[in-house]
Length: 110
Length: 113
Image (cartoon, rainbow over all chains, first blue to last red; front, side, top):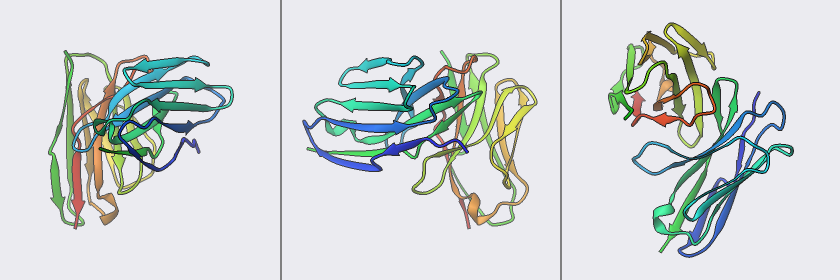
């Protein structure tokens, strides 16, 4: 059974706080690690696709790092804003399929 | 540009009734296609994926089936719905090869009563 674990399950922060989440995945047979943002009443949207050990990706205030040898990825949000409130999903590519973690629910209070 | 259409948006069905959810992709050819389900309070569970017409891989033994009658059409079906089939169903596509990101449909909220 392929396990993709995310922590924490949920997070409540104040506007302006920086925060980070963790995604753990199998360290063998690595193809790619994806991050998605899923806002309420919308479809999940891809943030990053990471394929190489040591990869760092950035999109505005959001960035991600990847460690394939130890099987984890971090997602960072700098200066959280209320519009960052969403569920953040990571997904591990295994062959032709993408296996998702349960997600981290982020709520940013203004 | 590519678009994905999924319908219906919501569905309320009695236990034992059949199910058909449809998903179509426009603007691309030979996409990889996926059906995911989110049960209440849980993450996205992969149900089926397809890399070509008539090629379906099932991930979880269950009451559901999938078909891909055309290159850009993916259908999720059931002959007899169970209460446990309730959930939010998402169709998605990606370009092959498979390190490409997924593009999701708008989802179907299925309630089986």
